[in-house]
Amino acid sequence: MASSKFILSILVNNEAGVLTRVSSLFSRRGFNIDSLSVGETENPLISRITISAKGDEYTKEQLEKQLMKLHDVITVELMDMENTVMRELMMVKVKFKKGELTELMSAISVFRAKVIDLASNTATLELTGQSSKVDAFIEFLAPYGIIELCRTGVTAIGRGDYILKSES
Image (cartoon, rainbow, N blue to C red; front, side, top):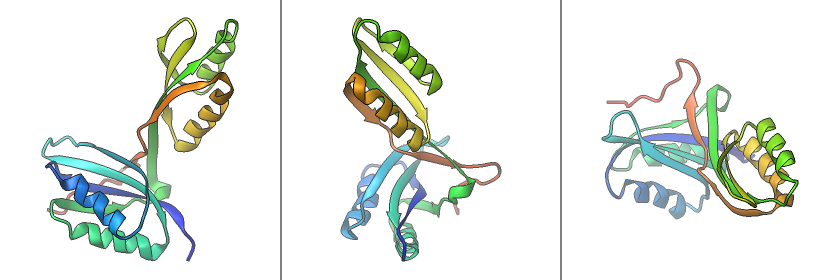
């Protein structure tokens, strides 16, 4: 079977140790997590975990079933990639030489990034978008000299009426 990218959205009780149990399940089965994003929901007692990984249909189904068996997991959903909005946040610090700032600012505008800190020879930028957009921006910035970079990983939410609900 062909391996493809998938997104799992998981609602869990917001308690210590839950993330360890979730990530350990992947590790024990030899699956890599490409990105992981966690945060409280509108209810501070519940957190939402978004996991991006690769696998075949069998892998996806097994992970979904095994996750539902974990203590503190409320619901698990394999997101419909065609019906999901996915975004990632990146902050990147680049260096630039005199005379390069105008060119850099043009690119920042094209990519719809934001300058969040500016010094005499460095700029710290913020970009939100699909992973492919983030990757393209990194590729553009590489010749300037990337000093530091951090990415949040993908977070996802269903379009329109497609919502992740707890099963309780």
